Amino acid sequence: MLSRFQPPPLPPPQSWYPGHMTQFSRILPRLLSRTDVVLELRDARLPLTSVNRNFEGALNRWRSERLGLSEHAAISSPHAGARVCERVVAFSKRDLVPEWGIEPFQKAMETKFPQQRTMFVSWNRPKDLKTLSSLLVNIAREHPHIPELNVLVVGMPNVGKSTLLNALRAIGISGPTPKALRTSAQPGLTRALSTRLKLSEDPLVYSFDTPGVMLPFLGRGDRGAERGVKLALIAGIKEGLYDNEALAAYLLYRLNALDGAKPAYLTLLPPGTTPTDDVHEFLGILARRLGMLQRGGIPNLSRAAGWFVRWWRDEGGTASTRRAGWGLDFEWKVDEDMSDIAVQRQMEECIEHFVMEEAREEEEGAGVSTTQERKRIREEKMAKWALRTKNRLARNKSAS
Image 1 (cartoon, rainbow, N blue to C red):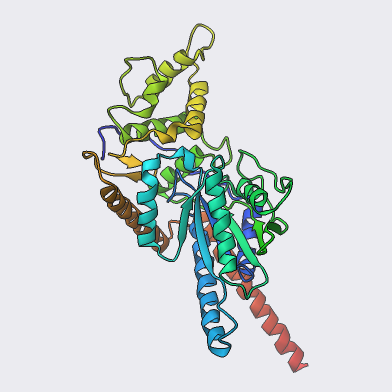
Image 2 (cartoon, rainbow, N blue to C red):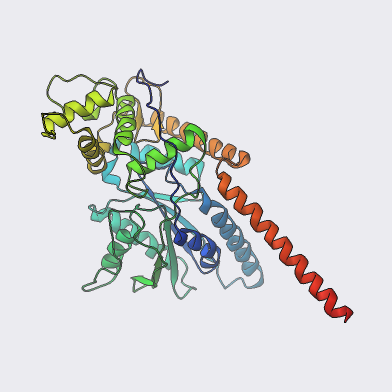
């Protein structure tokens, strides 16, 4: 363990994969065929857990095909110009993570994924939005041979895709620009591919908003359980699938792990309160502090747990020490104050470990549930049956 606090028992991962997510995953390759820039949004509080590995296969094929076609076009027609193939990863909700970790993380990502452009954005920081808008415009200007730049925005639910596109429209289009897309704090509001949205008039930049797509299966064992709790904490999963007290117990553990001496939640409790890993004790103190009492003066632990989770979502993630980790995805051995270079190296190790674990899960089939495996086998059997039937009918027709 990296701290003296023990992790709580985790609830099993919950499945939430509505039909519109399946439908979008099926049409993604077709959309990519007319896409120049993939803008993927991830949550800055979970920069690794909010990676949707289901996109990776389609995006890698898109990149390979695009670059292959570009090389062929350059040989056959040197003046045609290369095809555009850019992947931008934007980490939303920058204001909810400690600022000190942003630059080391970006450098760590550039080291591990040099083919991606990364940046952090916050909706209440106009400078971030203007920087992203300028990036897209500059990509279009670097390729004057194309009449327009098409951007596809993808990501998990509730990372802020619709909010971002509304903001980019307001920056890139002159004059009053009405909000084009509905937004909500609840995941899953966008269920269908949007119509094309104009983000810039000169040069022309268009975009599509897409439904947030969750992983069909969060995984097995502790890794899958922890992935589910983390995504529920950032409201990336439908509310109600996870009990607030279970989320509060895990959040309490992580805040203790980040700073065991002065965890961020102490600011919520009466002066002189010491850190604890007992979630019922903590929620009891918090409920009394907030006046959340039931008849007879009994603390309402469920209300306090919900309040604690909402507090963290709104502001609590910014108060972590640089000695023990960053956000909910990075944790390292507690040491003296670390330099930015040391932090970057620790982050690179965490990213490398994450990539290796993802690959191991893929090899072991841990990313596919038993139900999905049965469905796959059934579909393969149906396809073989349909092929045999087609061949038999063809033989009978030729024989007659």
